[in-house]
Length: 411
Image (tube, rainbow, N blue to C red):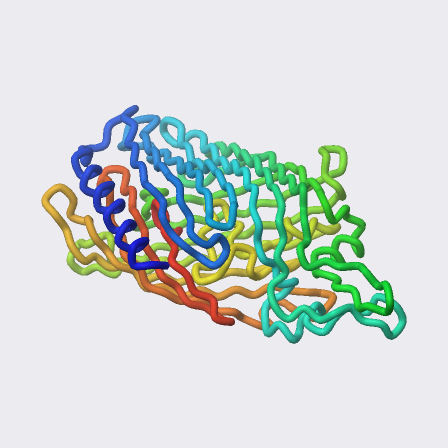
């Protein structure tokens, strides 16, 4: 990223933050807290990114017994001609009787894939080629495999309170990948040429998926425990989610399958001076294919959680497999307070780890771990809604690194 881009980011962020401080008033039922954020950034997946994001928060009931509802919308365009829009929401009804979780996305994008599994590229099938006839192998692919595709996601889950902090619910989930173009794929064998067979194409053909488009449509059963004091920027509490999703063909899925999502978050105070923003945050999740076969681009993959925050240091989808487990530890510290906002500025340091399986290459979960680490700054735009602007820089394996800009905490 150029010096000019960095200066522009600082100016835009400073303007947003200073403007937002005027709206820092006490919590009130029905009042909408709106925080816009211009986006200018860069990372290996998208190049230079331009766009706008907006965080909206509101108490649907009395703030004494109702959590703050939050939503985050964004639309961006990149120097690699990628158009991405998303809307994500956590809505709490009065007295937290109901919770509505939403995740809507439309991407017209491109993204590299690296085959399945974590670990050195040499242990993956594409690294030494596929046997496509007796004793004949495709060309090895030692680097990324660029794909272009369009993607629609529509997820909505409804939870009902069972007892304090415990919820159970059902959801509907739709993923459509279409206009898929596998840029490295070359099946030409004329004059004895070796074909180039990509991970996506081979997986799709072996599991009877159309490599140009596929759909995953299913319902889920969910159990949730949530004692966090704030969904956008928690200072304390715990979050646990168990979600089992069934994707039958009669709902439109290309093939029947199922998968299991397990997630845990914990926020541990480190303050002896009643500084709530000084804490240790823990995040672990696992995504497991439990029956059938998921389409390649819908397999468990890094960075495809609800808010797309996992795996700082890496491109979205950098690690993918039939099963994936992710963990992150983040230290959050207070730096500076101002009269209007005691938690105006903070800093973080974090480390994460990812492991993914690849049955065909005999790569099991936890056989290989790939790590990322980094540091960042936090600027609180609104102390009532705890809306943060986050600026992080992270490094990882295989030369991965990048600048990550977001609204609200990573988790």
